[in-house]
Image (cartoon, rainbow, N blue to C red; front, side):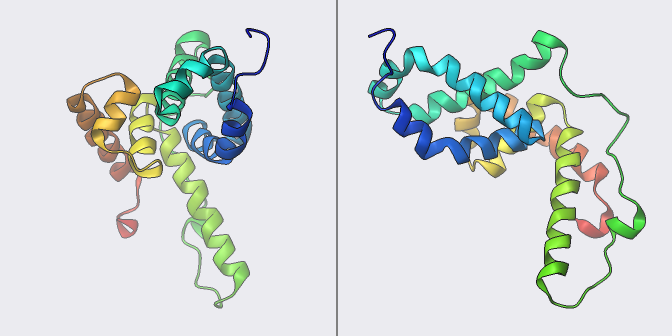
Length: 177
């Protein structure tokens, strides 16, 4: 059975693919990075799938594998990001969009700008802090679940969370807080 597809794996991936890609996008900041992260994670999970599925909580296992893969990328190849001194800022004309008529185009532009700013803010965080923020707020996990996924204590999650929020507050314009 080593060469055959594990039972239920294809169905799991079909059901969870979009959610995995969404979390991967928030972690990596790019669609290509998300696709690479999800693929690398699923390659690691594949040979263990029958045991994972039989244990009863494959989401927790896949989440932990995804997080470990994300965190190990920097250690393995020095990271894929170019360090900078801060968050890239938008021109003032874009960072403070003028009120537009209540129409779909104006709402879409504001939404896109919000996502760009959020992506840049998350990229400014160290990987472990970014992971804590993504798992707490995007994946809606408790501190205990984040600690389990990251293989650390709840206290570490709390301290990483506090540091991340302090960094985000420093980079967020006062009127947006």
